[in-house]
Image 1 (cartoon, rainbow, N blue to C red):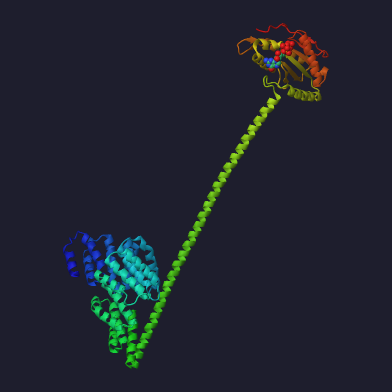
Image 2 (image 1 turned 30 degrees about the vertical axis):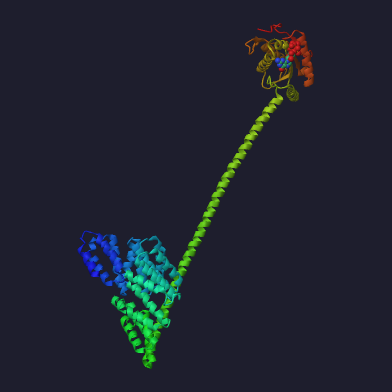
Length: 591
Ligand SMILES: Nc1nc2c(ncn2[C@@H]2O[C@H](COP(=O)(O)OP(=O)(O)OP(=O)(O)O)[C@@H](O)[C@H]2O)c(=O)[nH]1
């Protein structure tokens, strides 16, 4: 069959067509390890057409090249190539498969720490790969390592095997998963030889052409039968599979077949047959092999010789058995230690990663808190600014309102001159200062003439307009230090600082003249003329008391009115002409 397939492939493949080369790579994968003969031929074929292979296919071929040396125990030859594939192929699937081969290689060369460390890496990398072949080879290797007696992780191995069963749907995948599941249960003591799982797994494997897997399980089953006291059944089973095992020629299985037969015959009391099969087993592996079969064979030999009374021979074999047993125990200890070492490393790295994660979490939380605090402080600052701005604006508004109210409290709203009360306050204070400073002052009381007629003729609003205009005309004749107040109705008071009686008279006349000569245009476009009578009192003659000055100025005003209006009358005690007549006494009311 294998030769036929090879010939077909060779004949039907033009040297430029790469597709059959790909098929050969897959066929080689399928042939290994059950059909070593076919595998060798496909490999040879591939090497003949190596120049047709792509870079990725060459890496695949390199992996296939490592199979034979490892299977034949030449671990050194394969190791460099396997590391090369892992590090440089750039193919995740090939990398997993090389890792699985390297684990086996490390395990058989007794570098157990490396083997378990690699197994851990493989399990971490495996979820990234979809290729079923990589899963089959990777999981198979890891589960076998967990099923080692010295490790005893049967439950974990069972869990992985069951995962494998659901993920690998091919008949080969099902075979591997079933065998590994049944072995995990067997090693854990959860099944006995009559369990249908053995038959099911065996038959799946035989259908899939996976003879080596079927044989591995059947050899385990035979050992279980012996342990259960069914040595005869074990012998029957072993003889039935012997031709196939010997045909495949896989040394560990051949040695295992022979030594198990030896154990079965010894159990039945057949010392000669037991001795023969045990010696055959040692002959297959050599006495120095690390396989378990050597120790088992020496045990059978020592017991068989003892049974037959050959004490010297028995002692001789017992010594060899003891030496093998000690070596096996040392080996088991090394495996257990390696597993625990790697497990601790993995746990410690996990804890470190968790601690780092927690540290990062704390950092993230403190960063978030800092951000929150920054945001809060920005919000607080914004709020503070808003509150300050509100207070500043409120204070500004209050200040302006206060100023407005103060102004309104002190001024006459119509003429904008001081109102009566404030004029008295300010005038009194100014007079006190002037008195202290011995500075002259004059007080004028001014009253518009016949103002009632304006109201009566033009209306109250026109009268208001005339009052406003009169105040403005008076104001223009005064200095900033002088005070003007509306004493009531159409009467104004004027305090002039730093002025003698002569100067006061001059100012009063200037005001009278300005009023008498300035026409006031009303809203109705009618122009009116207004005159005023003024009474003047001087501090030099009346004193600095406002009340006395007002009495004297009022008296003078009265005299001005009496005298015909539109004139200035000076207080009689002042040393100036008491009446200053105007140029035009009888001012017409309307222009
Ligand atoms: N339009 C207006 N009229 C006012 C105001 N205050 C007082 N008056 C009027 O001013 C007039 C003053 O009249 P009188 O006291 O008789 O004085 P007069 O008409 O000016 O006559 P003489 O002073 O004697 O020249 C009254 O009719 C008041 O009603 C004001 O604020 N607005």
